[in-house]
Image 1 (tube, rainbow, N blue to C red):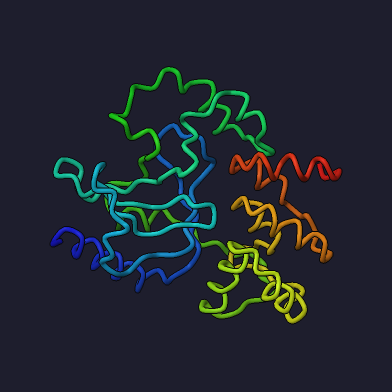
Image 2: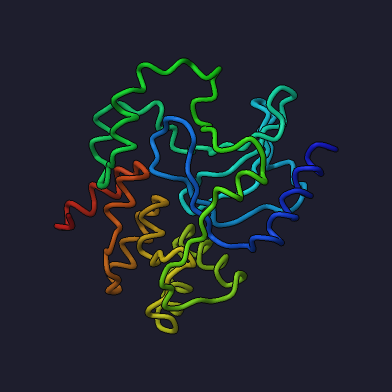
Amino acid sequence: MENLSLIIDVLKENLKRYGRNVFYFPINELSPFDEGVVEDFYLDNEVDYIDSDKGFVFIGSNIFGSGVCVSIKNNDFGHVYYYDNEYRASWDNEQFERFGNKNEKINNYIKNRSKLNNKSGFDDYYYIADSLSEFFQLCKIYEGDNSSTIDDESDESIYEAIENCDINYLGEFLKANPRWKSKFDFTLAEIASSTGKLDTLKYLLEQGASPGRCLKFARNNNKLDIVDYLTSIGIE
């Protein structure tokens, strides 16, 4: 697709300028987020990244499953949006009450969302910028205190081990890297919690991992089985 190739070219140009960092950015319409975040960018032409029904191509994502995408619709081409994989627009107020860190922006969304006009079925996409160049100008580079880092290939193996509850891999990895955090300052347990991997989380806690922000991340991502488990063992 010619349009897709153009988007990838512009993305590569901006990443050369700004680097492949973890970015925070504002969402420029009423939304159930404080701000957006992107950790990984896609730099090929894989059609798996295209939502052809709604006319978006995904260019990046984060650990929570949300993503940054660009419109390929004729009347909206090039505009940048944030995708909410948890479909918070469909949450009732009770679900939002389980958030551990509702702030002013999220409370304002809850209060005023009934006044929103229907976005033509795109309630899970939120406007960020008119172009990729404008998007990168809005971004702030995350500069967390990462106490231990490893290469991207190993990082991918960790996520696969968490996904599949590979206790052999995780056990060996913990012994070799007891203080490891992701490039976004997430511990193994926090990653398992935020992605809803209950069995993996149980194993990690049994091995002595700190619960840290697990409950907060589970609430933020509507992982109610994780929330129930953590509260049942006295974590608040």
